[in-house]
Image 1 (cartoon, helix red, strand yellow):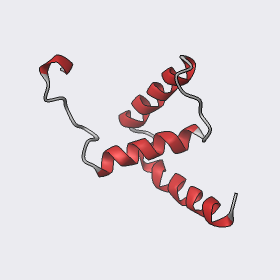
Image 2: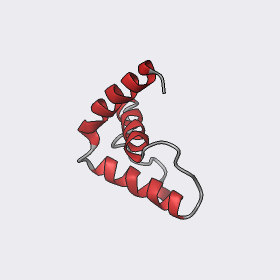
Image 3: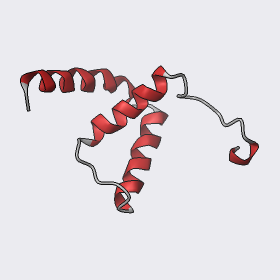
Length: 74
């Protein structure tokens, strides 16, 4: 692991901490846990980094609290 990558990883983890006690984090963590347990995916990165990145992505794109516009998903 290069120093720059390690530094970027630490900065990202710090920025993800604001999501750790949110419902979004809980849902993302459970979803990934389900996928791992069903052997649909394998984790090669720390779970906190994966969940944090997904939470950040949803937050930045404004989809953090998005509701379905399709009634079948309501």
